[in-house]
Each structure stands twice: as C-alpha cells, then as structure tokens.
Image 1 (cartoon, rainbow, N blue to C red):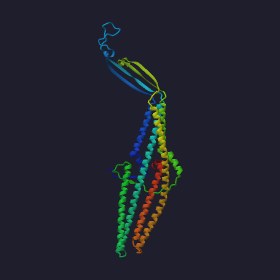
Image 2 (image 1 turned 30 degrees about the vertical axis):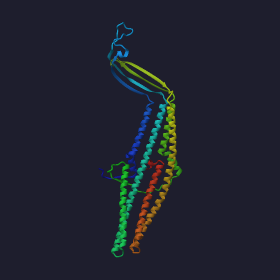
Image 3 (image 1 turned 180 degrees about the vertical axis):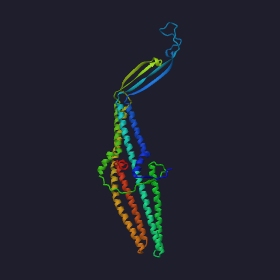
Image 4 (image 1 turned 90 degrees about the horizontal axis):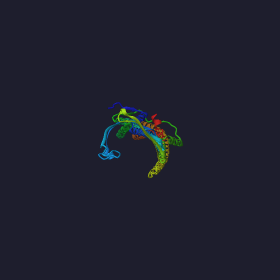
Length: 427
C-alpha cells in the first residue's frame, strides 16, 4: 500500500495522464490499428507467395469414375473388364505458388483511402490527448482553488479565534460586554464550519485528479504548484482563429476524412475499368520424393465488370453523401473554433482585470479589519464593525481565489481553442 504522498506539479500531472489515462491510451491504440489497416491494404498491391509441401495416398473407384466393374470396355477384346479400383498409390508435391495484381486501380485507390484514414485516426488521437490535457489542467487548477480555499478558511479561523479571545479578555476586564463575546464566538463557529467544507472539497478534488491520472486509489497525492497570475499579452482574435484552424487536430482529421471519402469514390468509379492479375505455381511432383520432376503453370487474367446490379453507382453516391456530411462538419467546427477562441479571449481579459481588482480588495479588507480591531480595543465601537470587516475580508479572499482560478482556466481554454494544449502544458 503506497504511504509516501506523490507530489506533482501541473506539468508532471499532464505527462503522467498522457502515459496512464485510459482514454488517451485507447485513442493511441485506435490510431495504431488504423496504421495496420493501411498496411493490410498495401499488401493487396504486392505479390504474394506461399510454400506448400504435401504427400497423399489415393485409391480410386474406377467403377464410379468410368462405369467399369465387370462391364466391357470399348477397345479391349471381348470379355475384358476393367478392375473396380486401382491403388493405393502415393503422390508427393513440393513447390511455390504466387499471385498478384498487374493493373488494378481499385486496389490502389483503396490503399490511398486507408492511408488517409490512418492519418485521420492519428489526428483524432491527438485531439483526444488535447482533451485529456485540458481535463487534467482544469482538475488540477480546480484542486489548487480548493486548496487555496482551505488556506483562506484556516486564516479566517485563526483571525476569528484571535478576535474571540480579544472580546473575552475585554469582557473579563470589564471593558467589553457579553454580547460582543457571543458575536465573536458565533463568527468563530461559522468560520470553522466553512473550513470543514473547504477541507472536504479539497479532498474530493484530489480524488478526482487521481482518477483522471489513473493512479492507485490508495496513493496519496499532493500538489506542488499554487494558483498564480501570469501577465501575458492579450492575443489578437483573428490571428488566434486562424491559428486554431491551422493547428486543431479535429480540423486536420476532417481534411483527411474528406480525402478518404474521395479515394473511396474513385475506387468505386474505377472499378468499372479492366483489371489484370497473374498467378501460378512451380512444383516438384512425383509418386515419391526421390522420383519428382518439376512442373509449373502460369496464368494471366484480365477482367472487367459488365453488370453489378447497381452496386458501383450506389457506392459512388454514398461516397458523395459522405463528402457532403464531412463538409457540413467542417462548417460547424469552423464556427465552433471561432466561438471557443472568442469566448476564451473575453474570459481571459475579464479574469485579468478581476485579479487586479481582487488583489486590491484583499488589501483594503485587511486594512479594514485592522482598523475595526483597533476601534473595538479602544472601546470606540463594539465588535459589530469587526464582524462586518471579517465578512468583507472573507468575500475579498473568495473573490481573489475565484479570479485567479478563472484566469488560469481561461488560459487553458485558449490553449485548447488554438490547439496548443500539449505544447504549452506537456512541454
């Protein structure tokens, strides 16, 4: 049972997911299968040869073969009959048989189609890897957000405890009142409740990350990174859209699927043309291995379909419909990429501004808490102001954590929109 916690940075988590995540591995296996499909199609264009060695024993029923068995046989003296059977006798053969195409455009087009299919599958695998990376990044920064919530909650519990102790001391000295101590105690219990919820959320997020990484459920995981702000320039919308269309593996996959359908259409159309094939064998044949002589036969055939019952026409129409369907998918994907890029850029700019405002809000809230504590200690005001300042600080902390989370998530969404997830996060 693992005991030492596995400490992971974001980059390490991404690389581990690409090695162990089942979805990524299945996509990789599917792409490898497509490569073998291409090799199978290529093999149909190449000559085939096989070696055969055999020995057999035969006994023939001549009565069944020639109608003999006591019946007269033409050309022989009257009364002569052929025997009912001959044998047994042996027959030994050893040789090579071969065959292959001389001219067959249909086989060649099908090989070209399978090659495009293998490329499409490769890009589909890359798209799956990008999605897995986005999932890992989102879960990781979500877990960082949960961890930051725990830290903020713990800080607020410590502050509430200090304020409660302060109120209790003032009451003990006869300066404060019981209601002030009660309010401080209520606020302390509320902060402890929020801390319990934050701890549960952090553990749940860690379990979710472990599941994505396909780790042993008993393996403890710790995060080595923290939520942070990276000052980056705001990318141009049109440039980002063009980058997405040129690099997104989904787009490249659809381009290869169109080529696949076009080659299938050509294969069906050109199946009307004549095709030429050859075959033959060279064999050592005899009644025993010591009495064999070389024998051979060679064949060449040219064939052309005359009537296929409408099959060729139907295959061509089906390929045309497949091309139309993929073009519709391309149009939809183009709009989807543009929407993803625009949305992520808007969220990125908004989150950048939110981080700046939230940082200022935390700073001002801390100052408000300090001033409220001083006023309460001096007896100028009761601790209602302190409680209100605490609540303001709690909201400011939550806003800061949420802004940092949205900023990092927007960066990941933009990287996914322009097809750069693996380049940026896997390195």
